[in-house]
Length: 303
Image (tube, rainbow, N blue to C red):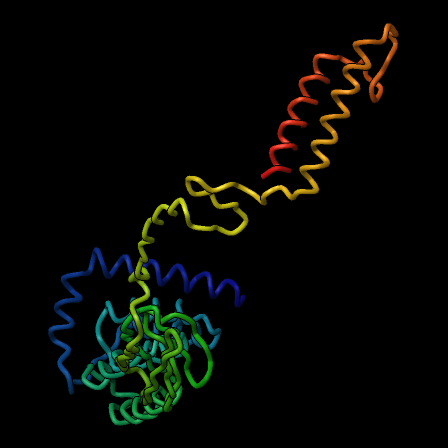
């Protein structure tokens, strides 16, 4: 039975909305014009039925449906109790600003004989006070630069947000940090109000590239300059390396004489198998080497 009642209410809401928006538009405007603030009005049966359906939707915690039902009722004619109930549904849905607008409209809307206008006004005052205590406010930060990292009461929220932050009523410590520098400010948040707060940190512009250092081309090393691991070239007239000692020259002279003697022995022998250090001796090679070593060794000995 309860399920059937919900279906009937849903069909009634849809039909009433269509009826009021298309067929009865002139009548609605006429009734709204006649319903002046402070005047008592007698709601229609459809308005009373819609009001009851909206209250039931609030009890069922179906707040969006409740708002739609009350809107359909208001389309038939403004009544203070309907604005009050719609504000209550919006308040439960967390739409505090819209709820406040509906509550304010209820003060000046036409009233019914029962409940009285004074009774509705008392309920409105209580609901609005509750609204102020439970609804959040908003904090809109204006950061310069936008890369500032923001924390609220020590809780990091990341880079400066571009949209308002919902906060409960109270005082908050806002801190902005960028490249080791920071700035702090206090924010006093009020319900249903948006507070704008500027945060500016004077930090170096990270977008400016670091100064480039142009490396000067290396000058060519002079011919006489000594570099590590490289033997310097000799000046004209100088001898490269260490001069040969007298003993080394004598050894070289002796080696040359030995080679000459070996060459003469090789030339005079008829043994074709004669070898010199495992290789077949070549008299011409031995003569040449012996003469060269002998002459160079003799020159160094006599020098």
